[in-house]
Length: 170
Image (cartoon, rainbow, N blue to C red; front, side, top):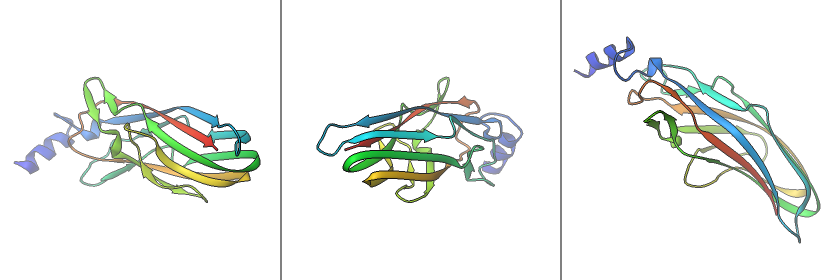
């Protein structure tokens, strides 16, 4: 029975990952400079991609779907009078949605490269760490590679959600 159901799904009947395209919008970036004693004089956060899309793929063949826009380059610049800590976090506004259909946002993860950057999983329940640095002058450049955990359980559709990256210096 299970084999027949998968064969039918791959032909576009019922819930078909082959017809699914998920879109994750990285629509916001913010910078927060906290008050002395160790605040930054200036801070800049740059992401070179504003939106990610995940192509259709057979979950039996591709269990983790990579975003078409990979890698995403992230640049962090801090200038401070005193040594300060800089934290970069990301939080989702909710799960991926296509009408009434939902893919839990924690099915999207990233792998990070670059000094101070860390790998993680998206969450709607609170900010997740993306990187941390210390100093008076911080120039960090890293790359993030996003993946979507693939499943036959996802209904076909065009999914979207907003995530916000926040750079905080204190």
